[in-house]
Length: 67
Image (cartoon, rainbow, N blue to C red):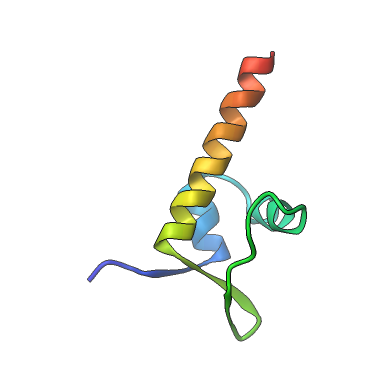
């Protein structure tokens, strides 16, 4: 059965960024806060993980295009 819920460290590994980058993007309003928390930890759905991965891929691409 495929995994359907992910914690921050797992999302960071999938997206290829550090966990604090995701936390910052959430705090700054670039990524929506996940609606689910368990024991104080953000829980991301597979759809949210894909969205975060796309956000950072596009951000990285934009930064390299600006150079």
